[in-house]
Amino acid sequence: MDSDDELRGASDSEIVAVGDYYYISSDTESSADEEESDCGGDDYEVADEIADMREKRYVILTERDIHERQEEGITRVSSVFSIPRESACILLRQYKWNISKLSDEWFADEERVRKSVGLPANGVLLPDSQMLTCGICFEGYSTSALSSASCVHYYCHECWEGYISASVNDGPGCLALRCPEPSCSAMVLEETINRLAKDEDKVKYKQILLRSYIEDSKKIKWCPAPDCTCAVEFLGDGNYDVSCMCRFSFCWNCTEETHRPVSCETVSKWILKNSAESENVNWIIANSKPCPKCKKPIEKNHGCMHMTCRPPCSYQFCWLCLGPWSEHGSTTGGNNACNRYESAKQQGLFDEAEAKREQAKNSIMRYTHYYERWVSNQKSRQKAQADLQKFDIKNLAELSDILGIPESQLKFIPEAWSQIVDCRRVLQWTYAYGYYLEDKVKNEFFVYLQGEAESGLERLHKCAEKDIHAVLPNANNLSPTLKDFIEFRVKLVDLTRVTRTFFENLVRALEEGLEDVHGADQSTSKKRSRNNTGASCKKPSAKSKSGRNKVARPSR
Image (cartoon, rainbow, N blue to C red; front, side, top):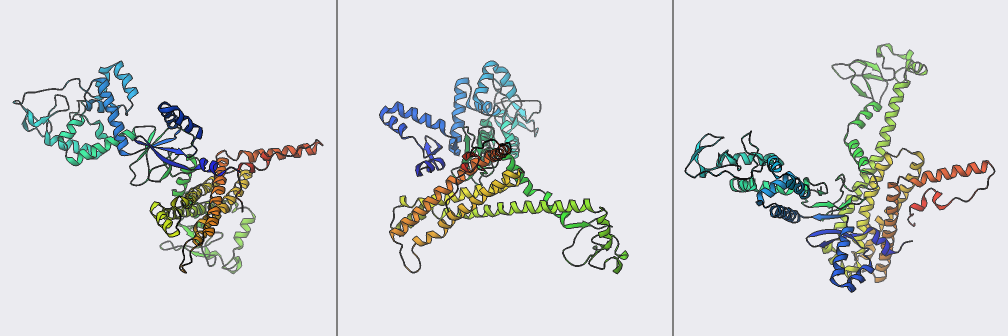
């Protein structure tokens, strides 16, 4: 069994601030690296920090971080290209903030880039005394009351305000706003918008500009949690699970909630199935029959075989054979049976319809089995998240005062609840995994592992939810002893560790497709073959025993 430190290092993670960004780091920092840093001076410290940053899987960016990155890029392009800031911003937006691609094309053919983007080399200046006509309202104005997008098409400020407002309210298209003249491709600069737009439109424009930096990037995505304004930059790893500063965990690849061990494709199919009408159709096929006259589906939930369709149809028929009721009576079996149906069934006339109906029933029962348990674990996870909030820093301090124990000695409680939340999430998605698992051999072993996972998690959940009351002051003013607290701590820490190890191995095994299961089946087949031919048989290795070496089993 691994040590506590190794297990904690394999799963626990914390958010560490490095510079202006937040990096996700694990607790398993090498002590050897720390010694080198202490002995080697500043050069070693910088080298270690760079090495650590390369090992990070993702970076959390706040709105301030995003704005700083934008400004850094704009300033860099403006300096290198020797162009105004507004022009640099236009170029970066059109090239999706890709400085490398912009630089290559700019220095290869600056004129072509300016033309494609709509960035004139020089603006047009007219004397203040000249009178011009606005191209939108056709009113005459002095040039001081008119503005253009660095082109020869001038419009009054009131018309510009309305034009900009309409574009900003339409969304991200305002970032590529061009001159109102259809034949002109001149781009409207940010300076023009800041000078002529309404205050609320300026705020919207800046927000859209900020969001464009994330939405145009292939490596950065917004956190999908409601009201969260952070983004996550993924630095590359096979594991797409990320945790935002708002404590929302999600899959960076598909932006759905964290769903290991199932793939993003399986999640997409499962969510679509839960929201689709396919199960409604299956239910109708399984539990109803069409009226022979109007063809509307009718459900029979009790009573005899005499059916009457609703008005205005009002057709009366036999539920079994769907024949007119006027031809039925005591000679055909009465109200509770139908001899015609039984005779036709023996001849195979109803085999196809009955088989289809039976298949639909089985499909509904199977889907309901997995869906109900998926929802049940989802609700349990949400409740566990609410219970976890009870042990935040403030409440933990209060509990420390009540028990007279340092806060550092109480952190094992929120750690246990955090583990429960993670395990509930994994257990929830194992039901989607099982629904799409078609291999019968693997399915049998999967059901066994799932059962072991549930029983182990229930023990941990019970200890964290109910056994904790034994070490809390109760209504009878009986204070727990230090011995009681130590015994509870040891029990909860051990259950947390064992459950964590089991679920880590379970996730790994499911993500690998339970490969050892077929290996075990093939080993058994070879063993039987050798026995049949009289050959000597060796004892199967540990890996051939249903893959159980892959998954640690929680101690009971």
